[in-house]
Length: 438
Image (cartoon, rainbow, N blue to C red; front, side, top):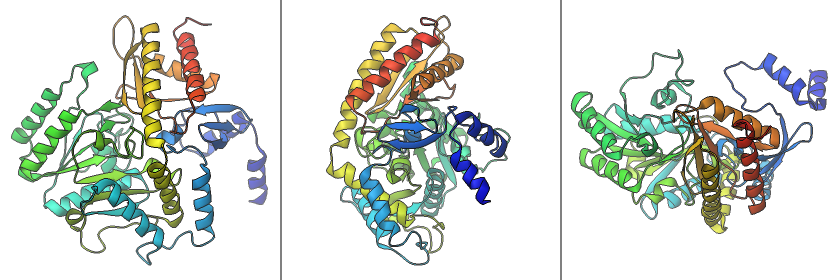
């Protein structure tokens, strides 16, 4: 075993490590880029061969404060000298309680809220559904086409994309219903989505049997589609009218990504429950459900929990992240960077006809790639652009139901010069992928 570990530690070749990855890791786990990362700082990473990349994926929205932020590293290091894990169901510890307090204040804005901590976003979503059903004593959950809520069995049932998430993984849990999500670029209006909800109530499940509607304020994997304030307010009115809970999945939109702490704060509503994860932990695995106190208390003692939920190291990292977001200028910086990115993407859209749409909120932006002649989604061209960008030193990934949208999830600590460097690479990648540049 010692020799094997020593061998692994001395390998500094991407190809050799990726060959080992191919042998040892199942094909179901996709790795988007043919690189093996050795270290990261801020918005930059270096592979095992020493090649530098701008990381505009950031763990798929996990690193809003950047790789290895000194405050996060220090907080985790300090906590590691005390206790790394105790399991909150066995004995409480200060970090869990402190983080729950901070989350309740950030979401509730003065109202009585409570928080429970878990490990992954999917785990938070599943527990939000449990809490909603416990509170309402109703079975039905309504989600949206294009939604992404995780890879667990209930998570992928709620997810509104058949491939690759559902495959042959069924049968799936019941009492999950779906309606379209607004998409102006593809001519799906808010009115049509609300009408579909009315039809759902009329022909599939009556509203008095629906526990909750779950929605991402900006669809993440579904294509970076923002839900407008008017649409969110309409949903809030409908849920109030029928005694249905409104759950906002803030796993990707939370912690400054949209220019506010949470995506729902752009819409003028307060949800009953929100799910959080990703950037909360600054790179450490942690998630949670934050909700109105009386709703959160619906499950009986023992009904909620998890061995690693609210791990002490992750709580320490999360408190450091909350400090950075609440006491610094990262929220304002996200809005500023978002405006710069949006302007530059629109400039590229004028130059390259394959960019059919540019959209997003704050520093959560995307461009949708289409076939110029047909106007249809072009997943193959999208992949070529991503591959060319990687070769030029920029990491990006795709999203959207048709996998033809390129999303930008750079850390909020990205500098102006790094943003310009990245967009210069995007320009080159577009030119190469479309045949303008050899």
